[in-house]
Amino acid sequence: MESNQSKPDLLCNLESSQRTMYPYVTGTSVVAFKYKDGILMAADREVTFRSLRHLDDLVLYDNMWDDGTSLGPKEVDSYLNPVMYTRRNNFNPLWNSFVLGGVKNGQKYLGLFSMIGVNFEDNHVATGFGNHLAPILHDEWNENLTFEEGVKLLKKCMSVLQYRGQSSVINKLQIAKISEEGITISQPYSLKTFWGFSAFENPTLGAEGSW
Image (cartoon, rainbow, N blue to C red; front, side, top):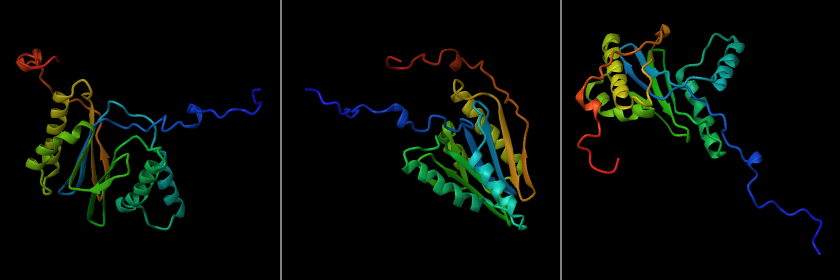
């Protein structure tokens, strides 16, 4: 005789086990480094949507105190670090890498937060395909770069990204300058590129393998 008691559902209940179905997305490649007067960042605009609600709420809460102080990059670091690590431990990560930069009291800060809760501070950081640009930054970066020299280096990095990953990197970028005076973000613009090289016409010529 079959029992009237409900049998346990041995299959995974998809509705009750959803994880990060709507991740934040703000860009595919970010390159950032310290320069003489602060921080410079460049990012493509292939995917940009959803506001960063967590940081918006943090800034609003800080302004509500009206105590004459403001959050600096170190304070935001102290906030983001446990947020990302806790989300990772709950198997519900924010599916992003965040680049955080700022200048406060003459001290420059530049750090990166990964979706698995790893964070570190460095002189130059990158996300996405930009992670493969380490040799260029190691060879040409120094902390005494002027603004003009820094922008030139950023454009070189983004040009390499455009040539090496044209299927995944859109040729539309913005550059941000962060200093004690505040933040300035350029209007979106495109880099000058040239696709007439013979290697681009038949990139698989002479390549071995089935690809």
